Image (cartoon, rainbow, N blue to C red):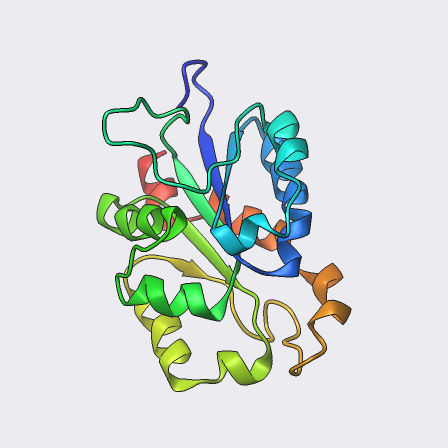
Length: 187
């Protein structure tokens, strides 16, 4: 919770064109009284308008780790949604690799038992790769709500992702965060 007793969402984006629409998630969370902080991977930052998101959220978009003795400029999160999540970031997260700020936050979130929702955005061939299937399964077993597969949104074939960005399930991600078992157990 922030100083005004509002819950705080970290909206984490990785390097996918679908990240351009993260403002939709910000609007959904704001409409339910949540404060939102956007965290972007270095590649994710290429796809967003960080200045516009800073105005929309009231917070600087963070992409880098802070200095150890510097105060944190963001309030602590009550929940996280990582969407879109690339196959690269999915595999690294499941392996515990924390080589970016978003991955470090996501690895810690599982240890802190924070509600986390993840929405991979990769093509059908990538998400069918055995290591990514194992990553999805493991993260689910560790408490992450994984929204992946044709039952969430239609997976696209390689080279056709731009035709499917408008179908990205921002509303489903937000609904899943509100219903996350760790969150509802604390309510």
